Image 1 (cartoon, rainbow, N blue to C red):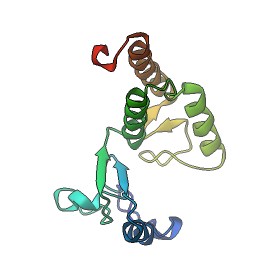
Image 2 (image 1 turned 30 degrees about the vertical axis):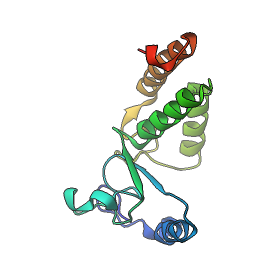
Image 3 (image 1 turned 120 degrees about the horizontal axis):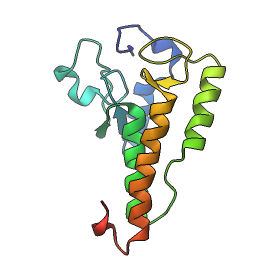
Length: 149
């Protein structure tokens, strides 16, 4: 497993390939969530990416501008389909971000301890979260998801 900059981080991760193989043997579908090519699941399109692409394949790959964005879009979709008003909150995201940074984690792009995700500062992350919540909140005000903005 390589970072986008080519740093080998295999030892720092669980054996993701074994995990995906075990899931496949048990008939459990796997979902990869990524942004730049180094995340588990990018093996589905590894040939189209840089030489630093992760080779581990998943059944489904969902890509976003950041992995966080990809995950939030899945989370939002599930909430809309199930008509559950449980979308992601900035308070929760900020809590995780602060705890990760305070525990020594670094930004995936800058390599620095900062309250950011892939060089996107917390103030922008907060704005993006409010935009997600605005659209999802408007969907719950309407009688069906067909009238969502």
